[in-house]
Amino acid sequence: LQGPSRLTCSAPQAALSWWGQADTFHLTGPQGASFAIAAGDTAWLTQGGWWQLSATGSNGCVFDTTLLVEVDTLAPEVAPTFDQPLTCAHPEASLQASALPEASVHYRWLAPTGAVLEGWQVTATAGGLYEVAAEDSLSGCLATDTLHLPAMLNPPQVVVLPVDTLAPPCVPDTVWLEAVPLQSGLAFQWLGPPNAMVGATTAPAVGVVAVGSYALVVTDTSSGCAWDTTLTVAQHTSGLQVTLFGESQIDCIRPEVSLVAAHDGSGTLVWLTPDGHFASIAGDTAVVDSPGTYIARVTDAFGCSASDTLVVAASFEAPQLSLPDSVARTCAPPEAMLVAVVAGADSVSLSWAHDGLPLPASGDTLVATDAGTYVLAATNLANGCVAFDTAVVWLDTVAPAVDAGQGATLTCAQPFAHLQGIVAGPAGALGLFWLSPNGDTLP
Image 1 (tube, rainbow, N blue to C red):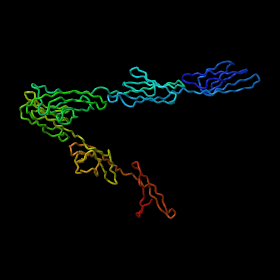
Image 2 (image 1 turned 60 degrees about the horizontal axis):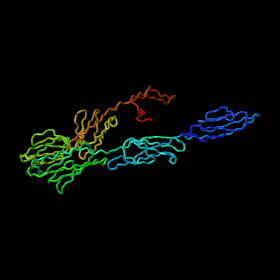
Image 3 (image 1 turned 180 degrees about the vertical axis):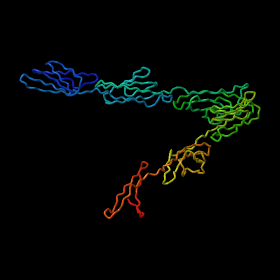
Image 4 (image 1 turned 90 degrees about the horizontal axis):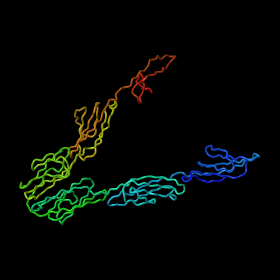
């Protein structure tokens, strides 16, 4: 009995042949396979396992021979990965694939550009969907998988507000160069003459006090992609001055604050904000209801401007408050303990109410003797923000029903009696005992 010893993806059939002299031949195999064959025939096998050829002679003697046909049709398990997304800072990514058995696997990648790459590790320069095929060179079995390589190669999205164009050109005491980001995650860097800029040179807006050229470099921090531009400021002195006054924080106590611009009245006042919101504007006073940077700019007849900036922050953090949803008040003890967990603020004021009526308690623990709904209010004293939580106290005071049963008579002939009571009540453990006429407790 002779034939291939292995079935593979590239060779899914095995030709089994034999030779010998006998009257009849019979071939049996796995899963009950059994059929008679003639001398010189070829059997095509699609199942692995032990195959037995039985040759029977004219004298009834039987000769058996066997052959093991193994199966190797398991495709490799391929797992593609990449080390980093494509960005302007990292324009190349390493794609890697792993599969078992490693020694006999050949890898081929199909890039989104249509390019074919060879090897378990390749370098990618284009984002998109990559397909990797892993082929076992011994068995011909093939497995494929895909991965999506992210690419962040777009320049930052930003709008630079125009510099005042003047006749004659003018730089007032402070001119604000402003950029408005159209996406998050942008880093700003202003460059200019030495000692010519005031304020943070890494903010979207920067003040300048000298003529010259100022460069702005905007970088997308997630991708490393950068964009730059140059602004030119020319000279003209006007003597305009403006000072911005007002509260620097809005919160639950002060959801709106007023800003006042003090100036000599020789120019036209304009209120600006790149990221805040004005609730109302009336002349030199502006009411704001959103955190952000607020600018008061005064411009004279020559187009020269003076500006001042005030940053308004926001604080609307309420305390973190937690009460149990419900607590039972029982007969023993006849009260329920409500304990609150308060966090998230350094200074907190607490107040309790029962069924809508205020209680004198002001701590984080309350002993409740009445059923009902209890509400705890926690106020952040720093900003006036309030958090509420509710606990329901319910009565668990239903006594069990007990029946001592019928009495009995003690006699000389019957000096003892068997007493049996019946107890019914709420589910749970019940404490039972008998009390004798002389006051003793019987088990």
